[in-house]
Amino acid sequence: MKDHPPMNGAESVVRSLHGAGVDICFANPGTSEMQFVDALDRTGCLRCVLGLFEGVVTGAADGYARITGKPSVTLLHLAPGLSNAAANMHNARKARTPMINLVGDHALRHRQYDAPLTADVEGAARPFSDWVRTAMTPGQFAADAMDAFAAATAKPGAIATLIAPADVGWDAGGVLAPPPPPSVSAAPDEVALRDAVRALKSDDPTVFIVGGSVLEDADALALLQGVAARTGADLLAPTSNRRIERGRSLPSIRRIPYAIDLALDQLKTYAKAILIETVPPVAFFAYPDRPSLLLPQPYEVLTLCGPDGDGAATIAALADRLGAQAVTPVDAPVAVPPASGAITPDSLAIAIAAALPDNAIVVDESITSGRAVYDATAGCRPHSWLSITGGAIGIGPPLAVGAAFAAPNRPVVTLQADGSAMYTIQALWTQARESLNVTTVIFANRTYQILKHELFNVGANPGRSALDMMDLDRPTLDFVSLAKGMGVPGVRVDDVHDLFKALGAATQEPGPFLIEAVM
Image 1: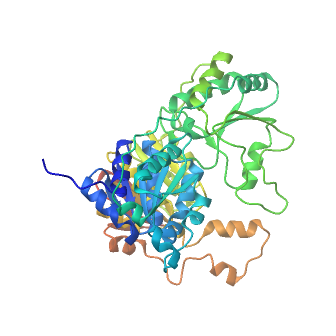
Image 2 (image 1 turned 60 degrees about the vertical axis):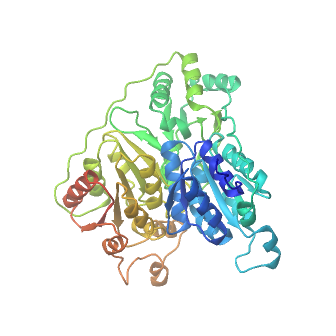
Image 3 (image 1 turned 30 degrees about the vertical axis):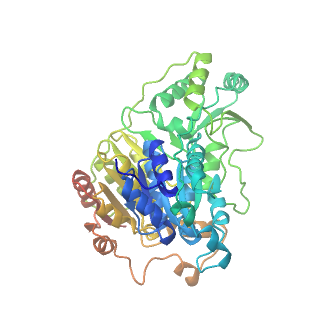
């Protein structure tokens, strides 16, 4: 029998991650990760996907986990590469998405010489990670990776970053490590259940605010709506959510608005809030003469189940105590295709709702121009809705990459603001290379419109210099040409009926496509 060479640290990590169920690696490697490139190639254990920017890599890992519920692994290069990846690590952390980052570092013996790429990798990782460790020996490397897997997959999901010095990866002595046991959610809290029953039986106006995995579970949401109907409570979701299952025949849930005045107005009528898999809502930013906390004071806030709890089991226990049953959803009207006319935020929403295909995955980074689309699509065929969660723009195109890998038989539709598209436009190249079924709709209003709103919110009276920092003109961005340069066909439309037709046609064809909707 032919002798096999001893396993190095990198191979032990790749094989152990595969044994734990990880099956894809989103990568932008450099010199210090070449031992992983070699191990991934030799073992064939994980599918490897190249992103041309680190923010594409972590955004794709986020999208993959939002659909599959399990982590992928990213491969990043030293502190500068990790820093490029950080914005979408931040979004994933706020989404509570499981992610494992492998970040190469200089060999342990080389660190002392302060080579050009030397930096504090752990320090760069900590603000955007829930778990950070540096591997020190090949024999322990795979066990470190399994600790990272355990941290990432603990409910509700976390960002685990394992730093991999080059010599720990290339040296022999790697040892396989077994997968960790699955995490177990805590049982429903009896005291919290009693408090919730008491609150719901009072005459005080009460609202449920529910997030996390409940929004991904149509049965749990329908049962909670039954509880709300029986008790007279209302039901809301946070402004931004990892994923919502919605559409015809599925429960519908309103979200707390992004705009602070709208959010305060929506919540002012309640005296009690019951939280399930979420935390009390706060404003995105502070403003003069407005509160940071959106729930009015005094206000009774009851946490029935935190983000790390089992929301579905908790809702079932609450429904049992109240004698509530799941409700049959009342479907919203089906959208009618729009007639010809200018593309406005309202007409755009109708066009998208009328053209959205069955079983679509909607990636929403529309920011300001697309705020009407969520309500307009309530009566569409069933679909999954993924939104920007941490406020770091540039998540839409890479999030769509990961979602398309996670569900290759489902059409992905990205609702994309033009300004934030430029942060990670390189994701189009990955979509083309991998022939992913992603249709990107660029909302081309030629400005950072949200920043203009924020400028007025702080009481400013902007002049030309201020507005020049927010307008995307001189020159005007040409997204059809940008897409073509990365292998993605596209079309520009300025009529809303043409938008409806283009979106309907693009989602029926394989491969990526871009529609620039001029507003």
